[in-house]
Structures are given as structure tokens and as C-alpha cells.
Picture 1 (tube, rainbow, N blue to C red):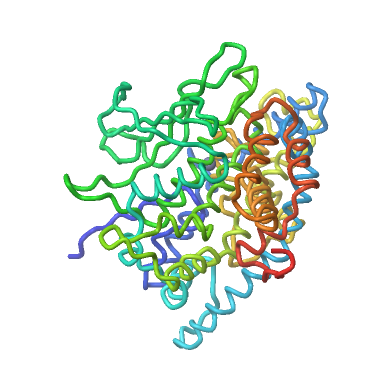
Picture 2: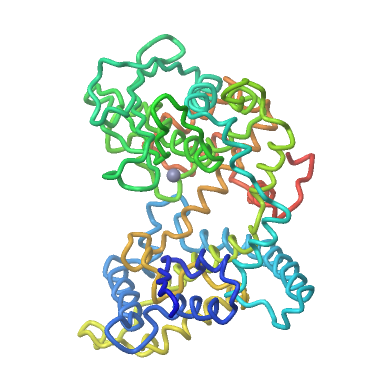
Length: 488
Ligand SMILES: [Zn+2]
């Protein structure tokens, strides 16, 4: 008798559990179970539904006077058109797929050295990538955590950077009601000494709390109603035992900077209408301030201020900092390619023109969207965009891509990447002009962060940067291209 073990699938194509399954036949079984979701005859077959959804959306767009659903959906986004989003994504394909091929070759060499006798497949990627990670990118969290005490990261890191760039100061208030005793509140003051906002921090995990991390707003800033913002960031860090200090992982640390970047968007808002305040901006712009603020975590001046041993106050050793930097480039060929494949697939489905077949409106899928055609459509699209690497499937296949069919990200999966390009481009621009200085912070605040969605965000960005964003900083950050010193 063997004990029965259930392996649960994650929603993505790639399954994290595969990094520790030694048995290749089992890896193949798990992987197949993942990619075949919704792709069988029976009650869970989503193929026809996906094709029909795409057609109904195309029809809706046509009724509203747009060429296709993506054109309708992107009309109020920064990208404006699906062609612009596709252009950005396809410009990243060559470097991303070249890197993925390089990563695959490295793993194939390990397989051959071990006399595995097989060609690397998608089911093997996690397993061999983990070997590469342990050999070349291993980050021992137990070495890092003593330098990342929550309070220090918050006060001497996150708040310090906000002071350096935007002149903000934070005074903890114990007299303001909170919804849970662990929640803390700070009053935020501007450089002039004027009270600007309230900031709530809810950092510890609790059994009845949703997982993950996010920013939210209790009160949106409003010039019209004379309201100051009340903004919240939520994390799920394990709560330390009484008397102990909470020590963060590197991932927690960047998440805190990220969520605080959203918070700054809310705190610094200075618009008339609350519906346009803070983070009320297009989806492909909203992650720009947060991803930009992630850079502050590794900025030399900021890092030197907060990354100190919680007992001895010794600074984090440079070798450890270098290791952290290096981990940002691990497996990025794969990650970019699987993302691009999914995002381009999303755009392909939503640029499908409406098929003028009356049957579509009556519930019968028109020709071109039958169960088999859905897979053909997907294959053709991935090939057309040159993201059809056999070892790197899209992050989601059509039949279980819930973000785009049911999760509100239809024709919007590209948005994360669009924002990320802006974030890196903006950070490199500031780096060339003195870094995270008060002057640069004021520029970002005046031209972007204070303006919410009160004017077209592409204009805001262009005014701040002097031109459109460039993809090169993103390629460098993700290790897909070597940094040219002049450009940095
Ligand atoms: Zn975010």
C-alpha cells in the first residue's frame, strides 16, 4: 500500500510542483492535466464557450461602432489601440525568446550530462530551472531576513524614500480608530508641514483575512468636496511571536514598496473630482507608480538607510545585495515568453472581427469557432507572433484563460507589461538625472502622481519624460539585454 497523495493544479499552465517531481512520467501526467483543462468533450469543455464569447464581444464592439472588441476596450486606455499594444509586445519577442532558448540549452546540457536521454519538454522546465536556480541564483532567505526588519523597511526604507523624493513625513497616530488591533495609522505631512492624508498599514496575516497584498482607498481625495485621502496598504506577513520582531523576505520587501507606490498615487492626489483621483487611471497605467516605487527598494541610498541587521545594525553585505540583484534576472526568458504568448493570444481573440452569421446571435457558433477551431486559432496566433516555442507554452491556454474570459482582463492582459515598461523607463531617466532626489520626486509628483486620471495619461508621461517610453530599460532589468553604460 502506498499513501495516496493529491496534487492540486494551479490556475497557470506551468505547475510549481513540477520543480520537485523526479519522476518524468509523473511530471508529464501533471503537465498534461494542466494544459488539457477545458479541452475535452464533456461538461467542463470550454472550447465552444470561448469561441462564442469572442464572437459576442466582437458583435458588441461592432454595434458600438468599433472594428473589434479590443479597439473598443482600449479606446480609453493609454495604449489607445490594440495595434499599439501588439507593437510593444512584439518588439519584446525577439529578446525574450532568444533568452528562453538560451535557458533551454543550458537545461538540456544538464539533462545530457546526467545521461537523461530525452529532449527538454515544457513538463521538465520547472524541474531543471530549479537546478539552475540552486546552482547560480540561490538566495538564502535566512541570510537576508535579519537585515529586513519590517519596522526598519517601513520607516527607514519606504517612508525614507517618500521623504527624499516627495518631502513627506509620517507621524503615527494612536488615537484614530482601526478595524483590527494590528492595523497602524500615520498622518502624512507635506514638506510645508501641512497635513495631507492618513495612511493605514495592515501588514500581518490573520486566519480570516484574504491572502496577497493590495492597496485600497477609504476616502478618495476630492478638491470638489474638500476631502483628504485616506489610503490603505495590506500585506500578509507572518505575525511574529510577542516580543519578537517581524523579519521580511526579499519578496515581502519589494511588495511593500510596490503597494506603497500605489498608496503614493492616492496620497499625493490633487484633483478636483474624486472619480479621477489617485489610482482612478487606465488599467495599463495603474501599475506604473507601484512598479516604479519597487526600484526604490534597491536604490543604493535607500537600501543603505534600511537594510541593517536587526540586532547589530550592521549594513547588508554587498555580496548579498549583488545576489538579490542577480535573482531578478533568473528564468526571465521563460517568464517573458509565456507572458507575451498569453497577452498576444488575448489580443488575437479580441481583435477577431465579428462574423456576419446570423446563427451566432442564436447560439450556434459561427464557422471558425467550433471546438477544434479554438485550438487551431490559438496555434495560428502564437505562430504568427513567433511565440510558439515548444518548451514555453502560454501562461494560460485559451480553454482556462479565466483572466480574459471571466476575470475582467479581456484585451487587457498586456496592461501589466505596458506599465512595467513605463516604470523602468522612468526610473532610468531619473537615474541619469541624479536619482531619487527631491527635485526629481517633485517632477514626478507634479506631472504624474498628483494628477490621477484628470488628463490623458500618455500626455502626462510624455511631459514628464520628454518622449514616449523606451523598452530598453525593461530588457536590461530582466536580464534580456546587457546594460550599455551610456544608456544607464
Ligand atoms: Zn500593483
